Length: 199
Image (cartoon, rainbow, N blue to C red):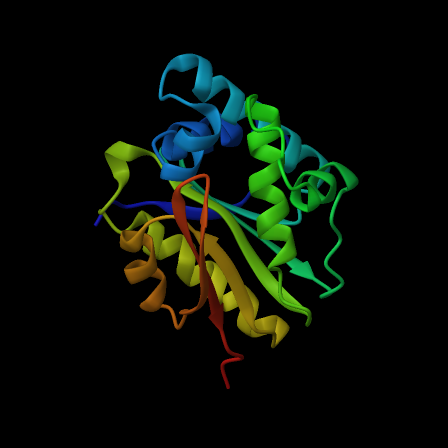
């Protein structure tokens, strides 16, 4: 196991956190489908999306630190269950022939599907979570998930997440998550998982 310290993300760390997430998730199937590649250009697009998310809606974000380097990020936020769906997402979702020729169109289409499946009760939503490739399978993700689950249990709420790989499904099952739905988006199977309140 890699020795890593789990800390709360600080405002000064947001830019580095966005870079870490973009590197960790560049080859995720849904990102490849949305951004149509795995080059530096696509990584920068993913970084920009995560930078906006962490800046505008930081919520509870934990980082795994090794020395002075951020090697993993985990974000949690409490959803009230009211399914807020941005107009640009809903417009694409409702269209019989949505515009999917641009990465922006594909991204909005994907996010709209995820938003439409958000549970209608209050819950702790996980995402994003990512660990740098060279530190994966060394226990860093487990440390982040243990911190996340502790936070969820303190809130006494159920938890929810989306993922696009069966490897991740197996990992999340270790923490009490189970598949409640699955759906193909942009030819990528997406899995929606739920964790009941832990007594």
